[in-house]
Image 1 (spheres, one colour):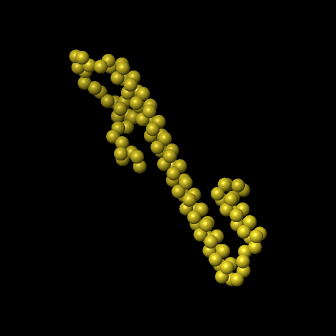
Image 2 (tube, rainbow, N blue to C red):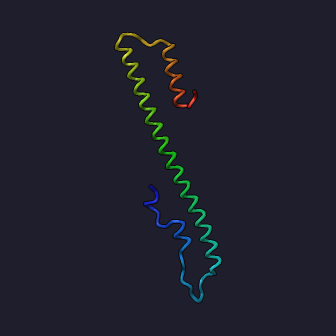
Image 3 (spheres, helix red, strand yellow):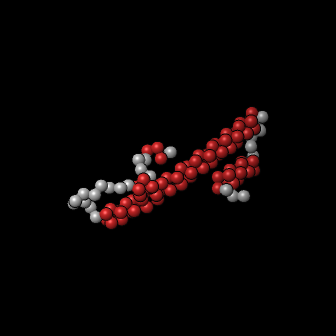
Length: 106
């Protein structure tokens, strides 16, 4: 996802060669600085990947919870159509089931 917008990879930074001029920079300083950039860039890419994975999982959980919510709403509408109002026990059971889904309590 983010890789489409990136210009450089850590490997490309590592392999970059600069032209040497008579008054050029010290190669050791440039190499040291590029090594720091590579470490930061690599960490950045790992963070983006982790957050994309986490985002995907949260979206999947959200879809599941929305489906569960629709199901419960339909059950309540069906109970109302049949003339029976859900009792406090039924409501507590539904809340308990939702808590298990949302908080992962078994």
